[in-house]
Image 1: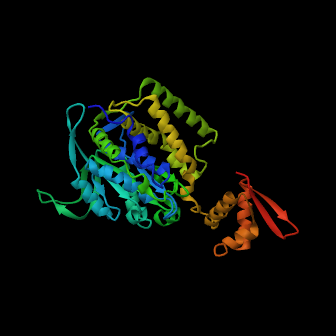
Image 2 (image 1 turned 30 degrees about the vertical axis):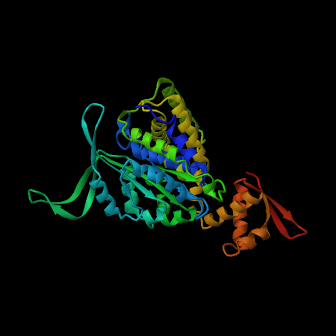
Image 3 (image 1 turned 135 degrees about the vertical axis):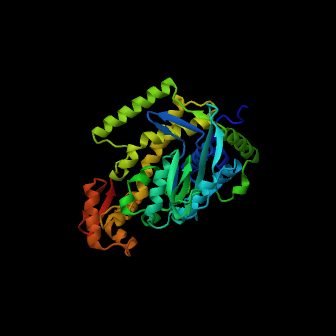
Length: 405
């Protein structure tokens, strides 16, 4: 059956265009919808590994102004239309396991074999409500679940009796497949993630989409209401995407492009050139090739029912990932081990926004967070990083900071 739309994701962005969230939020919510719809029905064989399209996507932006929840609320009904199992953000770790065990379904793969899976999407517009405060056990479980094991063993709360009378304290869920679509403000991340978790297993599996505020001002969205005809077309095409089954492979030119990209990245890493210039993203960079394969599968599914990744899909995946990576480091601002890490980020934000600002102005603006001695330490750090220039105003008995980029 032919698709109604040439490209699902591009049409989804058209559907969401008369809203305030940034385009990047809508883009990655759309990708999450696609990844969730694909479940474990499609995969990519890569050496000894089988890679699925599931993804952990977290929208990061200031509370109330970036419209994270609005972006998520447009995508969620699409998931519900194809009857995807969605977990509440208030779910406990035990309840999450219970929901997964109850969501087991089956499908017939391309070899005509019946395959069991337990797909679930966690939709958490407030990530802190879902994860809680520095919940290492849940983070460890989510880290393990991301890899979509054929059988995932977990610890039961009370144990149970087997038919043979033995007590078991573990159980197994077959075919786990977890997607996460969440939102959080940057200042909540330190309460969610312990310092030792930054750059580790869970964060290396997450794509953080960071924006400073809303994408546009839409005072009266009723002037151009949602296109109901387009919504129905999106739903119909998503039904087809949900039915896709098989093994994704690169076309010849796409594989050549991927190999060149991968080898080029490895050479750059050897010389200290990283896609994200922050040591906390070392784990993410190591998994970057997996992220791009997952994203390529989603973008191919957005475009066609053919189970293949062409050059257009790979190039598009690469550009989307690179665009997201430019802002990703801001997700962890203020989470360094230094005592002045958080206030350093606040000072830098002010200087970046104003381009030129006096020391006295910063002290007035941040009087509750900083004293002159701390500001002098911050000044030395930023000057050493070569992101600011420092000019001493002798007559005014002040200091002028200039942003250098």
